[in-house]
Length: 95
Image (cartoon, rainbow, N blue to C red; front, side, top):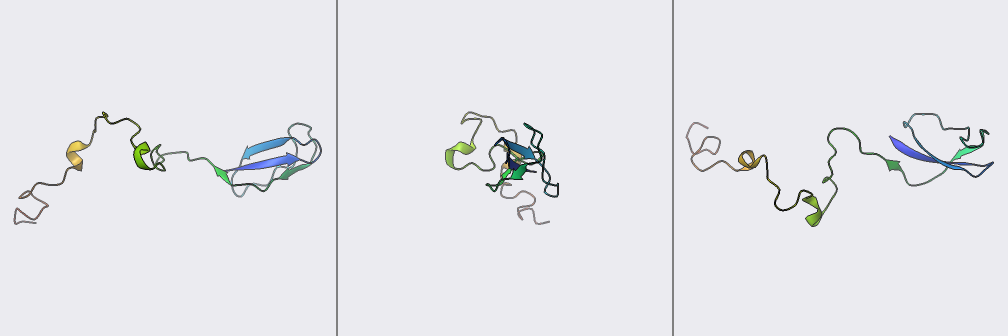
């Protein structure tokens, strides 16, 4: 969901709101309760939330390894390529 910025035309209060894309714009200022709130034009802000978003998704270079160089890999056996002559490599004759 995007984060929208609003500013009150009456008191100048600025406000950020987390809203759905199809939600109606806010009208009432939370500071002075007057219907003078206007949506500001700004860079779109959004929150990466939920399953599938990881700390390393948008990092580059050496910043990708957050755990450090000495971190143990839990999937070391499954990430290795099949050995020559084993099944699924074409070496057994049945694949």
